[in-house]
Image (cartoon, rainbow, N blue to C red; front, side):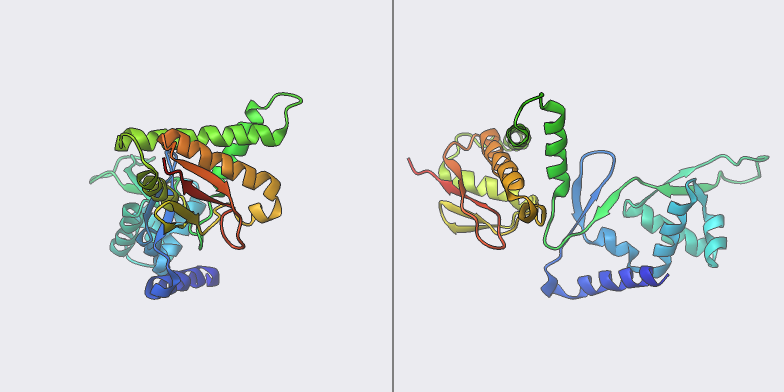
Length: 262
């Protein structure tokens, strides 16, 4: 219980203190990961909701409102209120289950179970899941005798190109000059946690490394993968007027994006 209260207090602190700069929580389920407002996680700042969420997760089966109320010592109506809040936040899912015994008069009971969502909040942003996907693809694609780092770089470039092409398909930006290409790339990289900063019209500095501290532990692997990923992203965007430049600074990403004026 103490750890639950501690986590709830932390959420409240983050919500009330704008100096922390926290505004996003990643919530991912069986489909594609997506970003959602911090209010998704803030639903759990209420201690009773922590207890109910933990109860449902620990049950490993659908839990009814009556069971939840009895286990937590609150009324059925209050349990239903909190459980439905958790459903609205994407943390639980609800359904109507037929009772196992003889059918009673009245409505089929509503039950709750975990939604399958993963919740993560990191300050600053970390995207180790992206790095893991790339390395898994590299392991699957690699042939005997190939240099592992080269295979990882190829997988990273392919992943970046896929993401860039997907964004280009949605935007249909036409031919991208250097400044417009940096703007579009910056929007994508901001979503990915790189914290891009436009130093000049043709220079984009990436102030955060989403792969830290792994990049500090193995820069010869992670930085190679990162540069290949960003290069692939530009390829997919059709941003031929921008290049990836190796330019490490302490506490930032190892590269910057530079526009090529023609």
